Amino acid sequence: MWAVCRRLIPANDAVLPIPSVMPRLRLEKSESGKGASKAVRGGVRRPVEVAAVETGEDASVQASKLREPPAEFAGEHAGFVTFLRVECGLLPNSLDAYGRDAAQVMWSLHEAGVKSLRGAEPRMLSQHLTKLKTQRGLDGASVIRHLATIRVLFRWALSTGRCASDPTTILDRPTRWKKLPDVLSPAQVGKLLEAANERQAGAGKGNEGKGKKSSDEAGRQNVPIWMRDRALLELLYASGLRASEVCSISVNDVHATLGVVRVTGKGNKQRLVPMGEPAKRAVAMYLEQCRPKLDKLDGRSKGALLLSSTGRPLERVRVWQLVQHYAKLAGLKVYPHMLRHSFATHLLIGGADLRVVQEMLGHADIATTQIYTHVDRTRLKQVHKQFHPRERKR
Image (cartoon, rainbow, N blue to C red; front, side):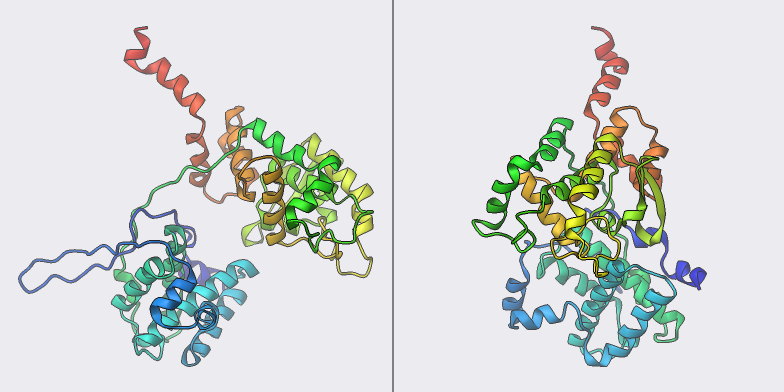
């Protein structure tokens, strides 16, 4: 079954880089022999509410279309999601993303008068991608993800006899370009990590909740919750983890003696990543002094390493909130993945082998890791000064 899934979801479609132009439809040549490919141009970014006003719909109706398909497409949508879950083994986050994207293209087909995937035409799909940019205000990376979903959807429909041909075959691939990742300097990382300390704990609650205690810390005055937050920040940077990965770490995944943590990444792939001494100390202090007070011992923790004040595993949204909270205390603008970018960039600047960094990040393709080699401006300047003829004359 996995072989069938791999044919329907090629690696180059599952993860595509940010485009410089929108996907465009290859048009057939006219009778006069003059034909061209019209590029679908993007518009100004707008929220869902603005798109709802433009289409004359209530915002709640517009929001419902982001998740549930029209009634006539319900069977095809359920079959597609089942295929992704059972045969492809996608994780919940990926499954939700594919399901939402499929539902939205089905709504576009429904509004065009189509009752099933069999009636879809290439122009309808091209118009759908255009609306994602102009009406919903999605950025290029999000539109590319939608395009990948549409390709997989119709390959699945063709393989199961739900359509006679694949209308996505004449949709051009967008022009690819790489965006350099945002990174922090080592000094900025240190400033962020030091923001999670006992001295800032009291002030942090007020700043985070704008004068009100957040639901995560309310009534937990006797719990040194800052220890959990320090362990969280240390793991994100010391091991280069994604937000979803740090939430999924269990207590048994931490091997303090070896100084490594077992991480389950995309596609349920597991890897061992070093923690480093500062992260080891932060995790050990959290396990000894904080986590026992958070664990309700009723099974709700599910063995997770990082817990909320309710005793449940920390959620990805909460990780975002905590990182941004401590970034604000440190006077920085940081999101969780920026710590992962900084982890990789600082390793390469320090002389780490690219293949080793690839393994620690869990990248399937080394080309994904190579983007971090362009961030080290110091090395580029040294190479330029050493080899450029005008520099050598000095």
